[in-house]
Length: 238
Image (cartoon, rainbow, N blue to C red; front, side, top):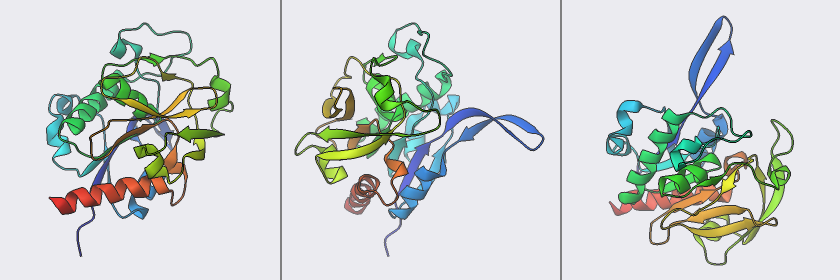
């Protein structure tokens, strides 16, 4: 029996309280690891590390694939902008770590999936920028702590459409920012009805996809399964 591929999942940095404790913690919703494991891979959490930001290859040497997960707003300083009134709770240390991982993963063609914030990190890592607050944010974020349902149309023949198994899908999202200038090498492969970019990808790579919706919330969803299958194929090919 072949070994399970190892998928790194970037953890958020948050302040958390439990019992008598109040600490800064590495945080990851269990939906990410649950879906990766259910698809046949071994999930491993990746805490942001200043030391490893300068040596992302050492982290990637331990992995067969990488997920840039959701979380707080990306620091506008990372794309040369000042924060507006809607941007909050930024974590520059996490931004730098994940952008370094994203660039190194693309360079070695390690399967990469960016989810929500992860898609934004991928865009900024490649020289793009963000819209700090969408005019149509209510479509994508209307109730704190609740995912918003809406439709996304995916480009025929795109990696996004192949991975999702359809060209029109209903998704669960929770974001108020969007992509502005597109990063180098990225192409848009999905949009919502308000024309907000919902999926981007890097042609020519084995699997390099960013999506703004939370596919990890879909139990047994096609997209995570396809991502893990592509990773397993890469491991088998050596």
